[in-house]
Length: 299
Image 1 (cartoon, rainbow, N blue to C red):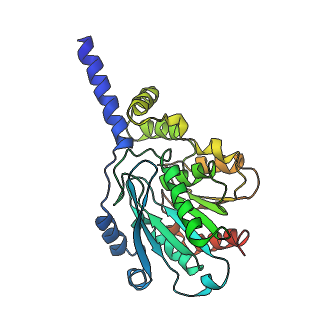
Image 2 (cartoon, rainbow, N blue to C red):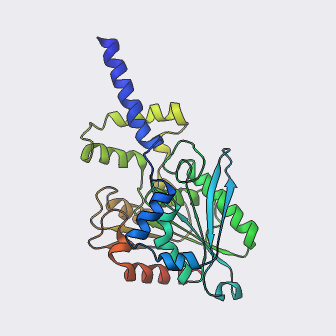
Image 3 (tube, rainbow, N blue to C red):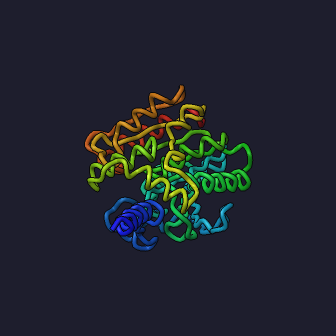
């Protein structure tokens, strides 16, 4: 009986760990269709702009599926080269970033969108909620500087897991001019405790055991994914964005990181916005906040 109970608990923890490491994902084509159908981006504009699809090899042996979008005007080529690298969220794909790509393209940026590992058209590897993804983002930044030169100005933007990835990346790479973190979690362990209670109705003492299983399978602890520990040590300017009605990733997490960040920071809380809906709820306010923040650091 005890052996059966232990096997049952172990199997349950393995399945819970798989919710993080092997999430159900939307296919790249399906996500594009959904985003276009709901009008989250201008499909005609997207089809008419210049774009290039290519792969970048990760340090971990899989390809990262990338797409470079060029702004419709020539202003970006006449001044300092500006590039925005956009990071999508958990279980999504690069076309989820097109709503933000439109904003950056309108500001004269070249825009690089890509699929995280284990998402979209990129290679299969355990999803790590930002732990390994930050190194993949560094590879994209390497590509940008190699392609555009060391005098380019680079902005990272992320949504949810992508925002956490962008923040964690700042801890290993000082080349980013500024970063925008939209509905990022401050600490994966705290996030999973919150979600275990509110969405799965599980006791929080399962989380350390689940973290152990994850470490055995994928080589990282949940405590290793803690943007708030990184953000307190970096000088890179950061704009934190969060919907005031976000309960999936609690709004308080961005508030905590904003307080923890030393200088060169801004906080934009969007009334009525649930998780990852800030740009949809107030597109004009979102654009204005991005523009004013970026203008402080990129002339």
